[in-house]
Image (cartoon, rainbow, N blue to C red):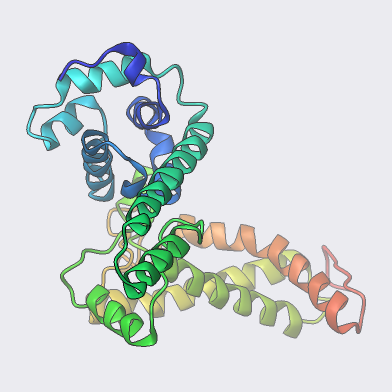
Length: 289
C-alpha cells in the first residue's frame, strides 16, 4: 500500500493526519465532515475507523486505528502522519476537502444526467444534486412519511447513542448526554434562573440570590436523577465515584459550581428582561438594603 509523496499531498490525507496527530481536533472534524466527503475508499475507511473509536470513547492514534482496520493500514497511516505538516490548519483542510468532494459528486451526477434515458431519472438526479447543495453535513431532505420512518428507526434501540465528549475524563465517565439533552437542560436551567431572579426582591443580596438559585438547581438535579437514573435506569449521569455524593446524583463541587454560575446568569437575565419588558432598572446589593 505504498503511495508516492506527491499523491499524499491532498486535503483528505492532511485532515486524517490532523486527527491522528491531535486528538482534540477529532470532535470538531467529525461535526463538520462526513464520510462521503472522502472520495478515495481507503481514506474513507480510515475516517470511519477513527469515528468508531472516538464514538466508543476509545483512544485514537495510528496503532489503535490500524488495529481497528485489521492491521493492514500501518504503512499508509505512517505515511499520512509523516506528510501532514500540522494539525493546526485542520479547518482549512476540511474546507478544501468539502469543496473538492462537492465538485466531484456534482460532476458524477452531471455525467449520469448526460446519459439519462427518461425525465423521471433526470429529476431524481437533480434532486440528488439539490441535496448536496444544501451545504450542511447531516442535513437530509425527506417527505413527512420518510421523516417519521427515520425517527422510529433511530429510536428502535439498534443504534447506540452518540454522547457529548466534554474534554475532561471525569466528566466523560459520569455525564452521558446527547446534544438534544443539553438543549433541553439549558432551557430548563435558564427558565429556573430567570424565575429566581424575577421573584427575589432587589434588596436580596446578589450572592444570596446566587446561592439560593444554585441550591434550587441542585435539588432539581437530585430529584431528576432519582427519577431518570435510579428509577428509570437511564444513567444520564453518575457521580458515585465523587467524594460527598448523595446517591450518585449530586455532589458538593457541582453544587458549588451551580452557585458560582448562577450569579452572572441572573444578572444577565435581569438585564435582558429589563431591555425587553421594561420595568424597574436592575440593581444589586452585597448586603441587604
